[in-house]
Image (tube, rainbow, N blue to C red; front, side, top):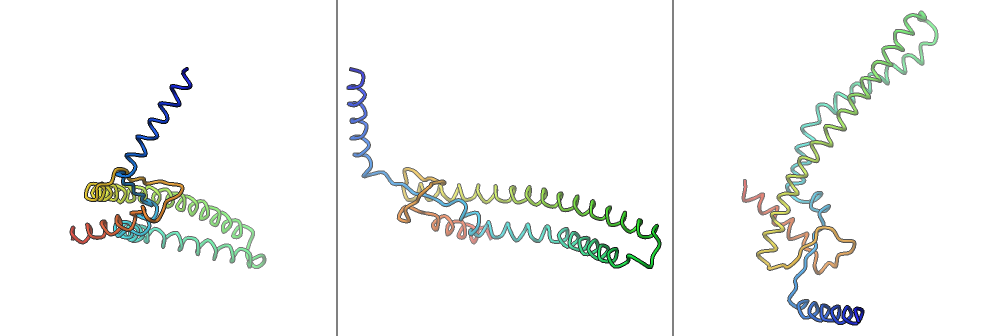
Length: 170
């Protein structure tokens, strides 16, 4: 008896869902694409590159210094005292430890800044999606999907909205 009732209820839900499906408007957004291609995302990426370029150059300078010292140590097997050689080895070791620390801190800080900037971009994208949904009367917009039919993909609209919003805010 319960199974017959469940089947009838399931059938009624299917019929009701089919009747509503004709008026149901769905859109899909590729969030990763927005975070790569939208004007605010590109601007954030350039801002971060500029912000971290000094530290990147410093790390590259230290890497060259360590490499040059390593080459010098390999070439100087004879001609210098054992104490000088050990001092240079200690200097290289300290340089490498410092370089590893600098690289780790750089990666951590860069990751943190990227996450901060992308959160701002994502917030703006969500507002743009909301505006598009209200203007074009969407019932549902999904941001993550395993498959998206190009007919319901509104990513380009969102990117254009963000570009227009960017132009308006200048």
